[in-house]
Image 1: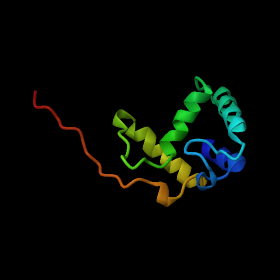
Image 2 (image 1 turned 180 degrees about the vertical axis):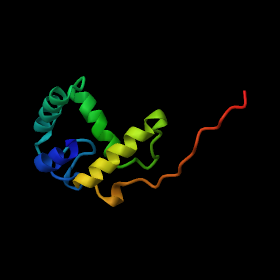
Image 3 (image 1 turned 90 degrees about the horizontal axis):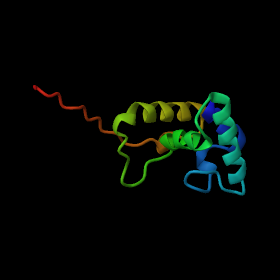
Length: 104
């Protein structure tokens, strides 16, 4: 629902002129949307919604270290792709690395 609303209100990410907000004099509307969305879904704040959105955004040249948030990042990218917010080209080249099991 989040990414569908973003596309409806602010267009797909490829049209955004800033890295983590739509730009084009729409940033104030975006911040207001995040606050209202947070209230509607019971999130702590609009900043929490923005943090969620950042999981779907393209990786930097250095990539990302998601740590224990890998599942959240993957689910956000899948939802954003399905809603048309991001495109295949925005998905990272991933190499999965499992955790080592200790014999202790």
